[in-house]
Image 1 (cartoon, helix red, strand yellow):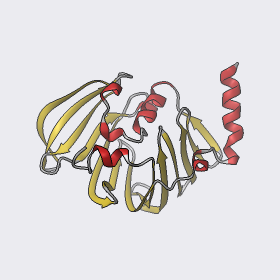
Image 2 (cartoon, helix red, strand yellow; image 1 turned 45 degrees about the vertical axis):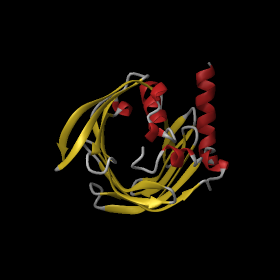
Image 3 (cartoon, helix red, strand yellow; image 1 turned 90 degrees about the vertical axis):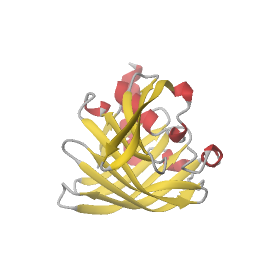
Image 4 (cartoon, rainbow, N blue to C red; image 1 turned 60 degrees about the vertical axis):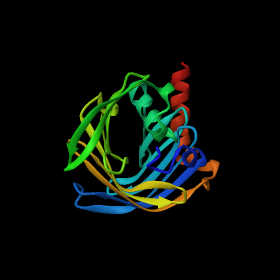
Length: 219
């Protein structure tokens, strides 16, 4: 927390807008612009034009959806619990109330870096590891299981090239690696506290699918 800028700096913001490029090495080296918005509490929206079409993800704090074109999928059960926790706006603080336990296991070499390995267990039961660079104190890697695919396969999230935007450090290179995919995110612009509430409303072309989902759940 202190390495990022401190608890006060993290608490001082209510939203963030990230702009950058998403690269998919396994999709013929595709690269395209991406916009990511997040805010308290657990609200999130992302959109990027990929070779398969317009990809969007969104969360209004309770419901989480993914859309490729107009085909919409919803997160439920452990998948929903995981994505809500992942998109907690102040997740870096690791508030004790959200965890059963947090334990530092010692140091380990990760990609040639000496890192502190921390084992975390959320109140939901999700277990994952985080690896912090012993020299800088910054998060370098997170290892977890993908609940969206039944708890497997393992996913690695790597965070590098931290740069200061305002009063906080942000990892401007983020790599997400699974068994069959790899996503490389490069952040070029960060804006704090300028995200309008309307960003988190489902796009008009997806509202019908959300309404059908709500009706089906009511029955």
